[in-house]
Amino acid sequence: MSISFKKLLFIFIALGLSFHVLAEGKKLYSENEFLDTFGSKSKEKVLQVLGEPARKEMSVKPTNASSVIGRPTEDRAGVSKRVNIEMWYYNNLVKSDEKNTWKQTELTIMDGKVFNIGFFNSR
Figure (cartoon, rainbow, N blue to C red):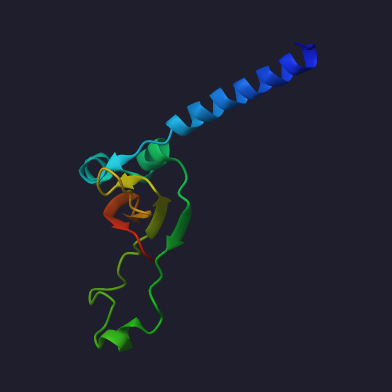
């Protein structure tokens, strides 16, 4: 074989092995395993294990919330403490059964800790 063909073959083999290693890095969780692993954990722990989410959203209280629900939304004793709520979305991370995975997993993070976890197929 020619030297250039050997080099090309070596490059393809090396790329194939590196892609295989990267693909193995993404773990699929069962529902209970995911809930046990990430329920009530800090967002730093989630970032360390899962990495950056595919999408993030911030929760915002509407300016006319009091009129919509028909009662004051502020604490009577004074201004209520500001709560920071984020929603993080990960794709194809949790198995719903042996053959299928949930298309999207939502983690609701309140004041730096996972507060709620949801699994969705349509959004």
